[in-house]
Length: 147
Picture (tube, rainbow, N blue to C red):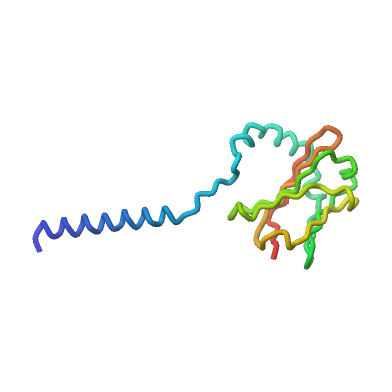
């Protein structure tokens, strides 16, 4: 074997490697964590203040899952009847298309109930945000598994 054949084989092997990497890159998902990440980053200071307002509530809020429903129980300290606006965000990091948003309901007392059929199976982070008496609150419940 001479130098010409060796160089030609090396160039072909390198080009094959590069083309296979290009193919693999185009097969990958390019989803963003948040579609409106810039707007959310501008309001990040408000999120920090909402977390401070929620100090002590993280452990008091319970998530229970049965065959048909997901129940999020708030402590008596949170008056859901006085909540001006509230959002329950089921966030799935692996696939943004499976995220779901639900508003707060004032019908259930201290419990928010969501039908399991409205969510795809998987691991979720539940992001709870609400406003009560002019103060914002934010709590995350991580590693919630919906089967």
